[in-house]
Amino acid sequence: MRPPALLVLADGAELEGEAVGWWDGEPATGEIVFNTALTGYQEILTDPSYAGQVVCFTYPHIGNYGVSDDDLESRRPAADGVIVRELTERPSNWRAGGSLPGFLTERRIPGISGVDTRRLTRHLRERGALPGAFGPLELGADVIRAAASRAERTDGRDLVGVVSTPERYRVGDGPLRIVAYDFGIKQTMLRHLARFATVEVVPAVTPAAEVLAARPDGVLLSNGPGDPAALGWAVETVRALLGEVPIFGICLGHQLLGSALGGETFKLRFGHHGGNHPVRQLATGRVEITSQNHNYAVVDVPGAVVTHVNLNDGVVEGIACPDLRAFGVQYHPEAGPGPHDSGYLFDQLRRLVEGRA
Image 1 (tube, one colour):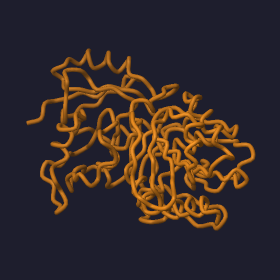
Image 2 (tube, helix red, strand yellow; image 1 turned 60 degrees about the horizontal axis):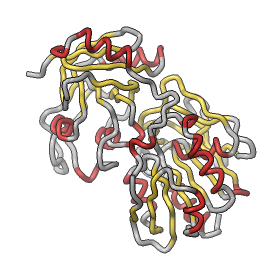
Image 3 (tube, one colour; image 1 turned 180 degrees about the vertical axis):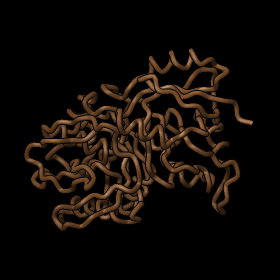
């Protein structure tokens, strides 16, 4: 029998549920966003870009196929919590190495199940992403409400330091040499790069001069959490790299690239979180079904060519500066909802560093 729990949003809305996962005697807090993906819950919960956020899954059954170590995107989960309608106790899949409830407890992720996630999602669509708090009712409803009033948004927060690697490490043994800035990098991203390169992953605070001194063939700016407007130090790093080495930016890396070029960033009302977002490649008219996870986007980037747009709301999804040998996309080409619609972007980086793009 799961203990009763309460979810409270910063605007006062309350929903009931049951406590699952790990608890330390305090309510869980964070900015609550909804994700429309039907599968990939383990990859989502271990995506470092979710630092500072609580994920509400819109799909009603979560945990059906269990969890596997092969599906981890980081060494430790970054999401501050999970909200589901129904959490599966007994998974059914030959790959499963355990259940999602067990994973939440083992990886210290607080959760709440039995929530009317349809109601919550409609509320967030109307009001925008909101901070909130949740926890077992035994903590006290007033304690949870007080925590919700103190819960932080991601606005203005530098969360990269929470997820970036403290030390350099290498992946792959390909002929090209790529430096990957870890603003919250996903393991699948590194697997794509390792097909053709030796990848040196460096901490987010690594100076541009130090990277350029190693004479890499190219630089990847990874995904990551938080508000790009709070990362002025990272923007300056990217600005120092521009024109000196080929650059590919993904998600937060794309936002930092756009900012370094003089563009602006803004916060979307409730963000793009899911695995079914249609994006048009403007040069060909081709539509890609993409995986996305971002609350912020870029606009008005001087000198850059817009290469991709979101067909749902027109948000810029890709930019390129051929003269500076730099390009970026807002979505996640390493993921596979298409399933391989966007994988060509890693080959585009390879061709760029080989001088063939």
